[in-house]
Length: 304
Ligand SMILES: [Zn+2]
Image (tube, rainbow, N blue to C red; front, top):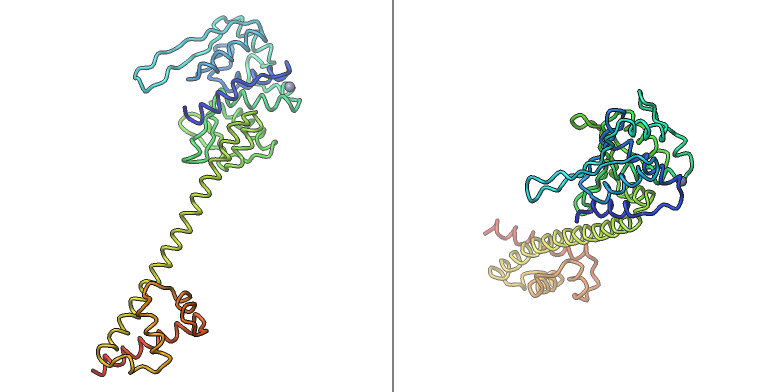
């Protein structure tokens, strides 16, 4: 099951305590469904639960009968589509009247979401009708696909009202209202009542953050190790050259000690070398001596 399906199943299973909230949820489903006019009232969904919920709500609130038709899938991968429709023109007029939608122009009946409790369920209804959410393991993205520009603007306003900043764009003939930040998505899920899904999203985010951090640290460590190895092999080459051509005694005492130390411990970083040397040298002091050895070797090579 995709994350989006889980969210929708969770939302579609919530029982509202108050009649006003059921009405607001049905209103959200109606407005953001496929059609909402005298000519057609319909909702398309691949989720049977949502289709049944919508049909049940319409009949229990308005007494109007909605039919649920399953349109078979063409391939095995394709999901069946459920179409919920009100077939009778009188019933359609009755539904529009019940929700206070004008019959000619699209009118938003604000009184339905006047109470705070109802805004939650209205947005839940809108989500069930036209939204989806990307697998948070891949990307943080939640979007509503809306046919009508005024409705898209209304939704942006409502999201804004509850402190969520959304973006909007046009895709084909639809308006897309989307949320990108994981915090925004979490907040909206919680607001609509999908608490379990919101927690799951939070957990995925934490896991992802930890994984990224581990990768960053590992990358950083790898880079440091590579740097240490490159520097050390340069130093060892110079020391070996001096050893072969002049002998280590050629070096002043303080450099000879460091040279021997480096030969015996080619894998150590500068700080580690300081630590085991017992010379009380700082990192830069140690570095300075090793550089000096390389200089001496380079100088000798020129002379020879
Ligand atoms: Zn309410």
